[in-house]
Image (cartoon, rainbow, N blue to C red; front, side, top):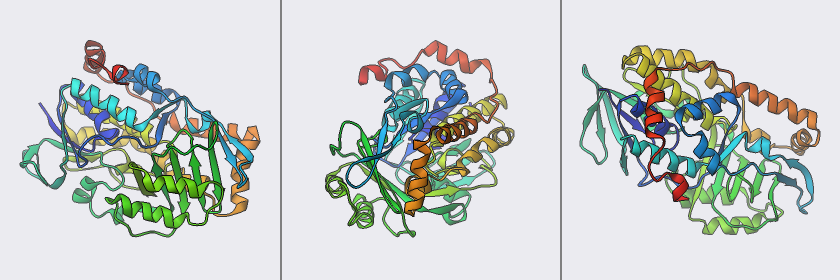
Length: 401
């Protein structure tokens, strides 16, 4: 039986673990955080490809029960007057769910399928041997695995250890984004306010407060909430509308996250016995495709490993051949330029897309085309048989919520 280690317990890693476990692989997930990370922005799925993968994974019905429901959001001026309407079907795709809820759902299914989780630990080295990949950890005893998967995000530790330094593969795109769990009342539905190079949204579907801003690259401690908050507070000093009150709430927020909007580009997703999926391999422009791409990648990679009977070289090549072109959708969008244009003219042009219906229809058709630009294989029977036997985890997320 193939013994596989996955680094990263957010979305792509557990989705892959679930698929692999159903095919009979033994899977361990290691996660640096002490527990599942709650909150985060809402994520969405769109188009028949995403729905098919969710259905084949046995997750579609439960995600529908947990969906947020796309909600409209007002784009406003400094006096709170509506300039344009950001429709829910644009921000929320066909099916939207809070990232934390999806992570919990995947965790429940993974545990039911026999996946082992190790929280509060991280990989320190990966050495390929004749018989596998020898892995050392910060806390756990060394072990040898047949394969290692990096599903640990844009700042991937696995990618750094095996492929090389982050600077070789990650390009900063000139914007940052931040999410904060706040309870700031801004009206009956969400509001989004812009000044050149800065956007703040509150009460909308993506998070309690959501920020996108243009900036030169900033040096800060990604593991320090206070350091990240300082970057945001400095960037938004003097901004109008209700931004000062929202920033006061951010200062008190327990859950806060800030990161760059960047782009990852690799010629190959695999090296030896190590392979990358999700943002570690091709994200993160914050353009609304990341979660769907991660789920499709998990489906394809697990299916190829099962089809190739664990021959990782053949499976990794088939994964790159079958998924590589589809993943390029992540390179077509750049949410920073769209959500936080650097000029007032750019803000006006963005708002015009939502004021004039034909422009919005063109943009939504383009995103739909990107989301469906792959032909899915229908992999071997053990996949379908496994999730039909289990029928979802006992005491599933419906009870927990």
